Length: 291
Image (cartoon, rainbow, N blue to C red; front, side, top):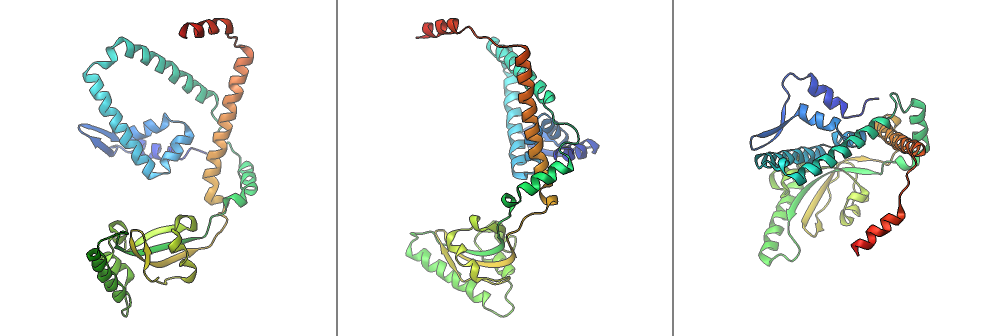
């Protein structure tokens, strides 16, 4: 099975005109260049980045910053300095060693087998249980703790307005959230804040959830930052995910473990054929000189 990031690579390679993912000054990163960078990473790290848009965003930003620094260093001919040349030689050696070890420890094509994947799934079912979760929407009225009396009065008026509109016939929670909620990102989405598990929900809100059924709207809940009124959009009971849902994660985990084991075996065989001996007496002399 191909690592997850290869889907990005194939898509970019097939494109006649790669899209620009980011710019900094006159520098830019395209889809093709990003995929070339991902191919240079270990398979586990590349797969993790490709599956997480926020992490991929940060990675692109880091690449652009790196290119800006490289451009500045090139303008000042930094790579011509003797001490830098020595560092580059060491870095080249380290890169060659790591690249060779990655090649020597690469997991076999077709690993793991379907049987291996199913065994891991069955053995870890209890740990794979997904906790109960709620898909929530909110209307938020800001009122930080310790606010001045005038702020409290204004927030109370806003809250009463929200509660009044929600109590009207045919009230549309999403429209009221767009109009009156003071948390802009969720307000733009009709108040929706997405799926949250019990562990992700603040205690004051968690206490109210057992009282709410599907499509119920809570009363105002006071938190340190203000008032929150919630609507339950959906409820997902705790469950064990299917093998299909976690297959890719299991494959990635098993391949990482196999590659780690193969690396250790390769190094063990190399050291068996080439035993390492260190002159401890001379090392002690060097240590004594430094004191």
